[in-house]
Amino acid sequence: MLAKRIIPCLDVKDGRTVKGINFVNLRDAGDPVELGAAYSRQGADELVFLDITATHEKRKTLAELARHVAAELNIPFTIGGGISSVADVGVLLESGADKVSINSAAVRNPDLINDLSKEFGSQCIVLAIDAKQMEQGWYVHLNGGRIPTELELFAWAREGTERGAGEILFTSMDHDGTKQGFALEATARLSDLLPIPIIASGGAGTMEHFKQVFTTGKADAGLAASIFHFGEIPIPSLKNYLAGQGITMRII
Image (cartoon, rainbow, N blue to C red; front, side, top):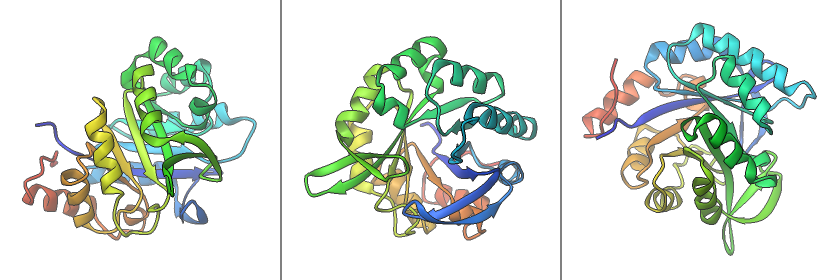
């Protein structure tokens, strides 16, 4: 059985790691490269860096971040934030990123997924989906959750997979930053529906929440931010706990 993955996520704004609740009320959590290096030493399996800085020089900013991270890390990392073209991705992969995360740009131009998969291979294309549970079901939201769409979560995840995405990073915006647990039912449905790995994000607050998302939620990876950034759950302790619960983990 493949080992489950623990993935710290670092939201980067103006060169600093930030974290909020339900995508708002951001507070500083430290230097992203230093944090990433520390997580690598602690046994994180991968890292995700999402630049949320609003800037016209997005590609340059992301490429600089990728270069700095690649110089310090020996584990795979994904980088995202404002990526909207084949050229953007080419620069980031050349700068040292292992994968790229695309979100709003893919919704606005679904052919982008096909183009990126064809150019670089599906293994490095992560389709990030931010969704909220509405009365009619789960619906995709854009721009940090501020813009609702008529795209249904499971239909969009299936389309993204068929177009060539190699992984789905699913964030439940209702759970994000609440530390009340992951969206287990939706995560499990995605896992059952799709043949590619599902990264669950939003709601991690305890070690048991990770156990639940790997068992009940059937996720391939669990992603979290604040509990790692502020030292609430050490990665080695989390992995040892999960291994003790019979979940296959990579232990260093």
